[in-house]
Length: 491
Image (cartoon, rainbow, N blue to C red):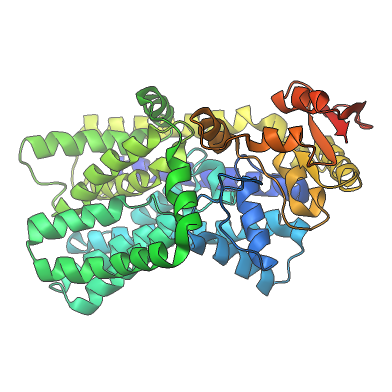
């Protein structure tokens, strides 16, 4: 059996394992989709609800009810329009949102494959290898992990960014035609309109045009869609938009240890991709060609993605989704490296190293899903007792005197806490804790509790808001549902 056959077999097994894990995860949440809200999804679901019900998307986040809306409007508008198109009930928004994200995930895999094929066209690559790596890149248990079915802007943003890379390569191959450059710029404008922090590929393309192509015309044409989109958003959005999208995400401090911890967590999950990066660095420092191709543009993208994503990853509250652009470009480099490996005789050492890295990635995926088995298995087997308890809890909270303040994102959603009335109060801990610490929020939500603006609070007894409620004269009562860890505080 040749090294080429073994390598393809290892890739195929990993791709199959990742697809199975993704399907299992998605199926496991179906039975409890109406009461499953992942961390940080509450503010996004509330924003989608506001659009569907005709309310302003961006509120002033530094005054009551302290609603923060982190991202650019295209993310929220897209999900809201899809829900409206299919007449999705408010309570079914979490399930519909996961389907929308999963659809974008298919697009991410497709554009990853198309970009790799376009990049490798000079060496006539096979179709199988780019397809397998695209599947591994976008169904992985860690990358993209649960973000593959989360109501978050990351999958849509990285898909648009990869479209920008694909169209940029086509534009460069065409000699820098204006229409092709405009199309690439438009893709990056859509990326920014979905999530404003996904700028690494745009910055890398700007750098490549400026330094390697040295064309001011191309630079101006390419950058114009993004510049126009950003200028229009800043001008039309107003102070509330700017405060939500730019100030609110910046209140958390930077910590090098945070970035190091997340990078360390990605080493096993992306072992092959990181290994290829080491090879790329070694070859570039020796002035050698990269896998028989001109990969200057992709190398520039990788450098920019590493620098920008590392800075963003250092922010307290950031997570592995911050590295999606870097992950995508490393997958492109990996495709080029493995294509070279399977198309030409390679040393036994290189083949063994690649195979070992793939086995490490198997282990990472298997270990991750094993740790999640207690969460996943009940949903698969249709015996999710926790989901039944959460449905009872949601029904109980919906019947309480309103408005209700709850620190659980599900219970705080307006179709539960306010009888589908505006406004709801959804506390984003990452923003509120940091903003209050530096004096941006004044009395904050705690002030609303002190002035008895809520009819009911449903919070853990250990919550700092619980003692504030008692001091404000709220009556503490046991929640008539065991095992929740929550207490009622009635005005």
